[in-house]
Length: 603
Image (tube, rainbow, N blue to C red; front, side, top):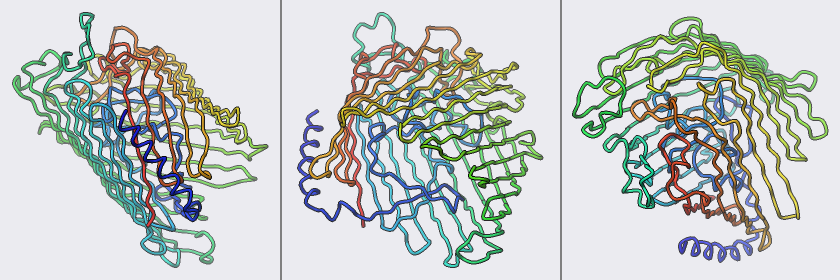
């Protein structure tokens, strides 16, 4: 607490400096980005936003609760149901929310070199440090890199997480505007001690000292690495002039994607933890490897309004010298993006035509209607058929030994999203039918559900402003699942933020103080398999969830250069309790002080 007080005093003292330096009020920074290959798209980066800054964990959705197993860097999963999909990263399902991926890369364009340093700290050496830098080296050439380091000892024995991650990208556009290319490289080094969950019995009167609590595994650990590198290039073959989009262009994308995972354990004290074959009763070491090399060629028409092409993938899997498989897949792919009578149409189509993924299909359609009186309506649909990864259905490992023949997991989805900008309301509702859903049973064996599962999802977001300086932000997700034995997720999850906000020192200092309240409804939930790095059904047992988590926070922003937060997390929960578990046997600690700092630099 003394550290937070000193930081608070320090940053308040800086506000006078920033208040006097009026030239910094408008620093003329223009920072835009786009996703890979979307050369005509340019979105604005809100690098000084405070809304989610205090929720620093690198998860996909910062506006809803997340099932976590403890400190930052440990296994976790979303409560939201979507289409099943697999790639090389499927080896690391428990860590997937943490990973840098090709789809998460952003390609920037900036008028000034920009650097941002971020640091977050919590109890038990929970730390996260990141460096982000982007700059235009010349007209049409940008270099960006992002480095992140996560380190946490965890509150219980055997929870040390040490992750090192990096991604770098270059985007280039020629002076005549005919040639564009995106180059990228990323790497994720993920290392976790795996304690298999904590054993808290009714006899544990004083659980404040987590060192005294027993764990299921004492010597297990996962060491994983994923790598991606590749390029997507486009050349305009037919232009009317340099100011209009190309009538016809051709593009090529190459991607190399590799994932490796090594799991080791000393079985002298944990033999009963595993359900299937054990080859070595003293010490086991399992290595799994998956790799995909792909090439895609597309013909683009009318300024990329219509695209059609083919993709080839070369696949390989390796495990313990007992699995050494290679396969290939070929796809036809097509995209359409155009506006007709003011209505925007966006569609993507992908169909496997031969090889391992011959039976795959993925077809998405979005229709965006004209905005009327600040009301924006979008309808969408998706038909998906995805083949499970080979190593998901086949294991020749010391801790898991099985072979299954899995067919595609299928989804049909239709929904609508309504956004009212002035009233700050968003409603997103969809209906899904899942057939041949793939899951791991309580024995960690892959199964496929024969019957269709229907899912209704409603996401609601509403932000209120009252008494001029008070904000109440509400995010609620409702799910009705026809088969909760296979999909044991909560009906309701929500996150609410109530806070006071104001600006001082000629708007140089923005101040926020308030509380976040998260609610997770009752559900049966999942257990976690360290040896597979996968979540599986628990079987019978007491329900998880019915949890309310209250966090108190204070946010500061000094001009657009410095952001800082301090928060007391989970103040309603006891220090260590089974009732706080979102995943079986992984209790979440309560009453933890955390703080973070972000500092922007312009060159």
